[in-house]
Length: 177
Image 1 (tube, one colour):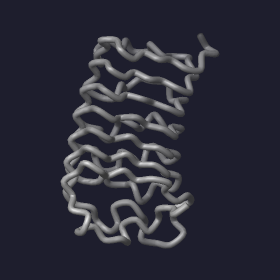
Image 2 (tube, rainbow, N blue to C red):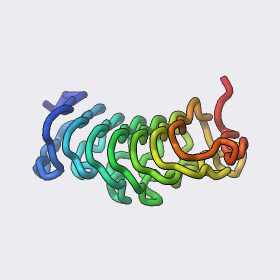
Image 3 (spheres, one colour):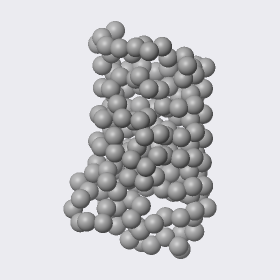
Image 4 (tube, helix red, strand yellow):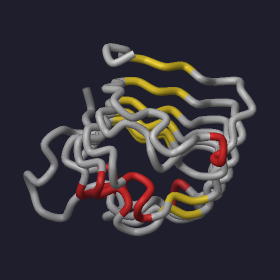
């Protein structure tokens, strides 16, 4: 098992209590999907080697500060189709290499804090939430040249935000190519 690279565990009735401590010990996984399960939070003891973590279609309600602290190598995080209302400020700082963030079909009422500081983030899915306001600095850093890669896409449709209330400068670090 030590050379296993990918595990798909979707469609099983797995709850957070179903993971015994050390269940993934010794595994150097790059990819893990636990979707369509019964998770109510981000599991605490997954391999820290993960590059992709997909926890979509669960019952996760919040992302707390310590939830992502182990996963410094993540470049894709899937949390779509959950019940997430809150992402604790500072949580995203633990995943500095993140390039793609899926938070669609949740219950967010605001853009998660910390997106402007994510130098490599290129794609953010926030559609089908309850976001009613987009601030001019919610996605892009204030200082020029801080972000290493421009966004390729930001998805905000099916939110109650009025497009005419969003300043065009809010998307100043989105690539037009």
